[in-house]
Length: 342
Ligand code: EAX
Image: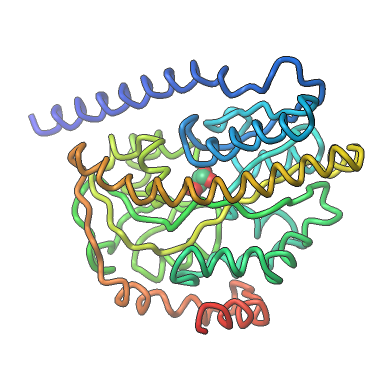
């Protein structure tokens, strides 16, 4: 009897997810730029059509059309339609895809030149988004972006994913010990995996597009993502517990194929850069607003939120900072801490 009920619940969840995927696909047409624009960039994200990445890209689309007098636009493809984040980075670097907006999760393993990015993956690195903006828009962020030079990707700038929270469908998780033995999906990122191991969980790395089948098949018990994604990707329909751990601050990066960018006139580059910069500010503000309202929205849907003692989580993950196998760049970490500890 119990088994049957569980199976039925699983099926209902698959149907809910299937239905929302269908609705999302139908909306995708709205995300194409003005028909009349002659220069079009195809940009992919893994997030939902109403997600915070897409909202930022829609603003950039509007600004790009405006600043280029209608000559340039973005065609936006959400929901991993163009592939997972690692796949999209590969495609952009080879010039078979124009642009992507991806989290920093898969960047350290993108190439030997980008391994220093792992410093951004440390747990409890930033206390708030303002500190992150200061670091990412400052010297450290610019150094990291420049590591893409020669890779085929022009990494334009840092937008926002947000502080990552933990979801599961079994129980309230308040202390690290509650996580013991649970299988948690992480991004394809060794620092994140090491952090979940330090917490006593069993991390499983996978691309975002695989998460729903992994949850359904029980390959994982939980996952972690900012509230903006838990809400708009409808994770909360299948995971009823959210723990506010703020474990990692997750930025995302706007990328364009270097060849495509280099092929633009100076005027076109200026319009592109200005649209990207202003859309970044818009997107960060939007992201913060969603982070503030998402909890209430999900609570109204019956999701249980747990506020945790983050000091205990910070302590339980401190060993990751000492793990020399992770290749954390000490100079960069010191520069970041100069900002976060001032
Ligand atoms: O970039 O993979 C993830 O969990 C990311 O947060 C998501 O794809 C948005």
